Length: 247
Image (cartoon, rainbow, N blue to C red; front, side, top):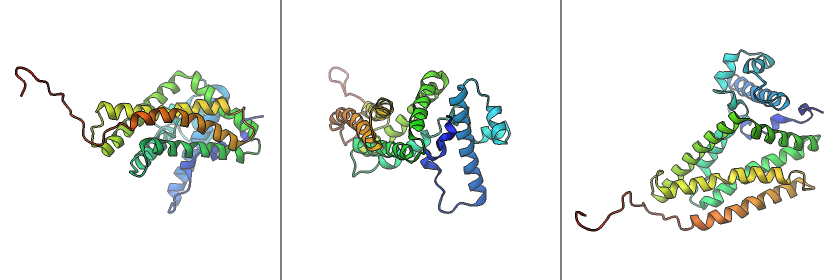
């Protein structure tokens, strides 16, 4: 049984067709999807380091230069959803009607729902589950992918810190903004680990969604306690001291 048994392309919510898409844009979107999906399958079958970008290009009928026109690095071929999460952080975390934790949980819930919906839509859900586990193994066993993921996480923390700073009137560099953003983004690996833990322990995909969500919400409650004390006014950039020479 191979990964062709499942529809890998369906696990890409950002590839939905835009309302007004021209032929050129459609071709570019479909080629980008083909490159990423082909690369992901090849990496999972043979290992990340064993596959050359030139081989991916040949399999898709394009030049190696074309691949790099769409993806700046080999790692980004398989880890191409970071920008989607950053866009969600900019939009949803800025919602004044949601607390920072609730906004983050909303993003995570949407991403999790996409995964469970994808699993339930497959002709062979068991193979789809196995494929997700193999993807996790690929990530954990490939140093360059882990490094790329850490770099992406740092960029996401920076985005979250900017949004939180706008909400509170603080600077993105203030320690409150930094620790809050770091804590919120730490919920993503919590969800990833919970998904791997519960993937073969639950009977239905609804149970899987509920079990993973419960783990994430347990972690989120601890963060919420700290963020409830986040001030909504600018923090002092300097600590004034008293004594001789103080203004």
